[in-house]
Length: 252
Ligand code: ZN
Image (cartoon, rainbow, N blue to C red; front, side):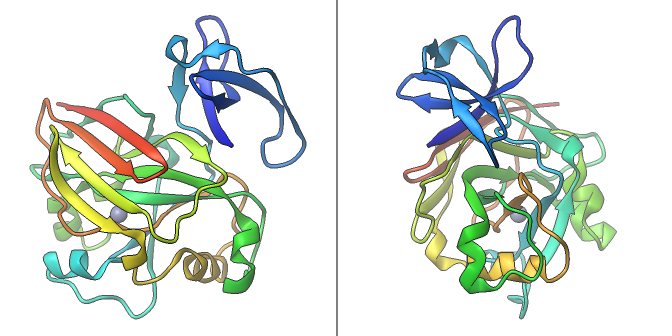
């Protein structure tokens, strides 16, 4: 099932599910008891919001060997985790705004895992039970500030620096999916999720040994090689084979 959050002209933001080109409302708790209403609202008539409301936005740094190397870094021995603030979230189609403090804002195309169940000290073997689904992410990063600050809160935390969506797919197989990033139609990044240093189950186990994971928390799983600068007027498309496409224009 593909799950979205959407807004019609009059209504507040609701959860919905997609059937072909139509949306049906979901009533109840998508992580618990819910009912699916008939899909009858045309997708084109609604505005999609980011597809869940995460309490925590977790990210993993240097989880593809070639990307670690392109920035002159070692591949970490254990997952390198950090957080982005929920205030940085934007939806598919919304603008990435380049902040005046940076001259080097870059795209990072990533697969995102959405957590569906509360858990602590989850084993890699049990990790699948805690996965609600997958979505597409762009972990936008002020690379110059990442280097000068030493830690990454500012570089990764500006408003509009966390794009994800357009939907959560609860049936997606993430074991060998190609992740690409195009800027103005030109290919910048392309790799399979098979190339991750630490796979999704290992990441869930590692992170949950530090903090409790909650339904709706999301985990950015790292970016492949080919990160590059975004300029005013660019359009950046992150696509994951079999999952969909996340597109955002860039402005000052
Ligand atoms: Zn990243």
